[in-house]
Length: 335
Image (cartoon, rainbow, N blue to C red; front, top):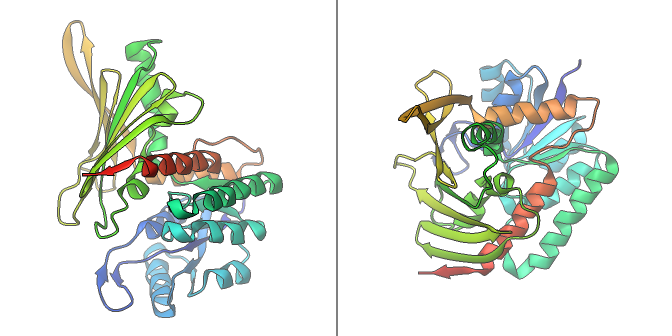
């Protein structure tokens, strides 16, 4: 089977950005590395906003992964000049929809980083209409259109554990803590962190989010809302780049899961929880690997398959997340 030819818009390698300020690799570069390590895809093009950075990133990437990737300073030129099967869009969210449209119009499958779009209340109706039209276009053209949600890869393990530990107990309340080393000057904590939430997938309730409340205080936010009869809470925190970041934890009814970094050469996480065995509490650890790497592999398998399959990260889910973000932004109260 021929490997998928992949382009990445917005990949930044280690080094200096335009103007000389040092920066570490961004999410686009990590996606590119995951693709190149897979036997299903190869990165043939990378686009950045200026030529020097594009050429440097391509050179570093080619050296690190033994690739033959070309750097572009214009994403449209990249889409036109390279015959791509798939494009990853890893730019700031205000550029996502236009770039998704450009890719789909050329018959290219799309993976878009979260969120699907920036929730600008002044353009709410326009943004939602545009996003929905792209979801419909992808369906009409038979193209895959994914929106990244790496923690969705934990759902299989979480649901299996809940079934074993709690049987058929109905989920009545869920909470999740999410922290990131965010860019505090933007102040977009909901846009930055809410798309990590997997609560909607866990509760499996149809319909829109209801009764939302949002309390924000600098770099911390508490979101409460309901899906059907399930009460939900999400705590969002943005730490500075120098602070230690806590990994997410999730509580379903009274059952708590925590993510932990394993002491391995590669980035691997484990899902830990406590269970009661013969009256004694015991901590159990389930290795889940790298959620982002797992997600990239899953999306490549879907696109490589001759059979069209549903996905937990389809753009339809990304659109629902965008609708929820608008609901939460409207409900925001600044302390």
